[in-house]
Amino acid sequence: MACAGVYADDMSKCLVRSTTDADQAQLVGWLFAAISSHPSVKPMTNLTDAQRDAAVQKAGALMQRLMLVDCRKETVDALKYEGTGSIGQAFGVLGQAAMRGLMSDPKVTEGMAGLGKSMDEKKFEEMLKEAGISSSSAK
Image (cartoon, rainbow, N blue to C red; front, side, top):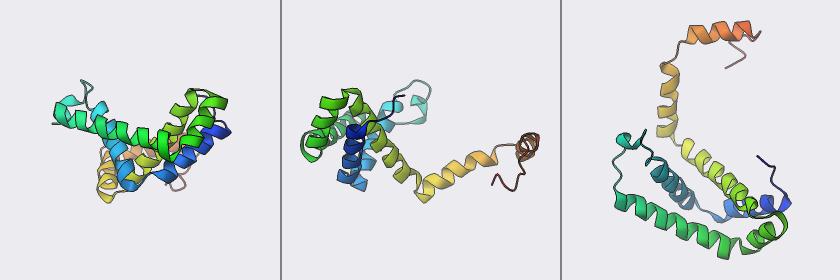
């Protein structure tokens, strides 16, 4: 993946600065709706097509507002000097910021912690020892 240039970086900062927690949750909701369409995870959700369509509409309106209004100058500069790939890079940074916010919720943290309970801690300690790392320093 290419490194973001100064203009994509400026656009990224503007996108993050210009979105509220609700905006970022909306973006993550759209990503969830899109990902939940994949056949391997679709049985785990009960989203209707209408809910998916609503998520797409809201995310589209948000992206339009961000690029055409809130961060128009930064978007124009990024496109002009760094090309269309800069848009994906900038929105990638916004997506990361939105995911950090979502992941910091106590219920999500609790759900993520459940993964560790399903792993064999002793086998991981053996691997760390093999790598020359004490299990206490890895925590």
